[in-house]
Amino acid sequence: MSNQPIGVFDSGVGGTSIWKEIQKLLPNENTIYLADSKNAPYGEKSKEEILQLSIKNTDLLLEKGCKIIVVACNTATTNAISYLRANYNLPFIGIEPAIKPAALQSESKTIGVLATKGTLSSSLFHSTSENHAHGIKVIEQEGTGLVPLIENGKVDAEETRLLLNTYVEPMLDQGMDCLVLGCTHYPYLIPVLKRMLPVHVKIIDSGEAVARQVKAILEKNDILNTSEKLVKHQFYTNVNPDVLKNFVEGVAANISVNQLDF
Ligand code: DGL
Image (cartoon, rainbow, N blue to C red; front, side, top):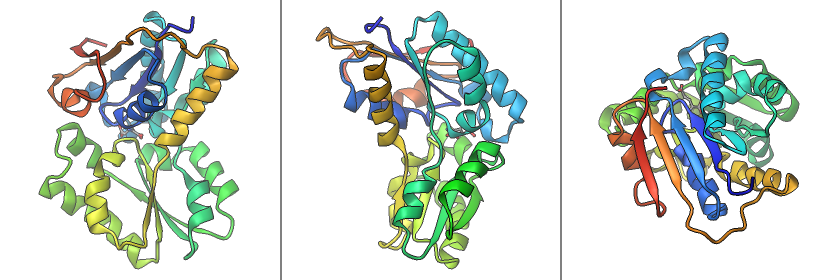
């Protein structure tokens, strides 16, 4: 069982930001990554559609023998993880906007959350926000349009910078000193954001914390891969694989990126 891969899925290339943290922390683990780019952006879909897509991705990862599944997508986590946990017999690890660490670090008591409409409208996001942001002003900003640009490889294009700026500026005007990246595509915008934001504004994302949680769950279930054998990282996308290749090739040994209809 411990040799079985860790399954990871996202609506596209964004979850590779989480996969990279997992691979760094757990280099002995085999992985399978599904980029459902054909159906991106999830953030504009209904809760029911996001649920059905999450079930489809889970079934495929199970078919491929995964031992645990990482839902490397805030939108799918906040809309579907409770269903997945209740209906499948393996551990799921999800990702949610890091409101708690931001609330603890904010001196201006004003934090910004940049996330998809699907995440910001979910009840899980609202309950996390209510539980962890007492006395903190939480500015919610939908990042509409950013995911398609990143899916097209336009991470540092002028249109991406301009759009991002329209989202960030109003939050700065309201005194934000912590910006929570509530979508796994957005860590790829960090270099652009660093040029855009005053130095005192902290950028907070949950990638490393998710990787630590994956390790803890593998240990708890006694399925950590301790074998020193060369591991395999299989990536599957349901669109042209060129963009996904740019995000992952060269990051680790033995990576294959394939197109698959799913
Ligand atoms: N990467 C995703 C997230 O973390 C999904 C974005 C989307 O497809 O809208 O929310």
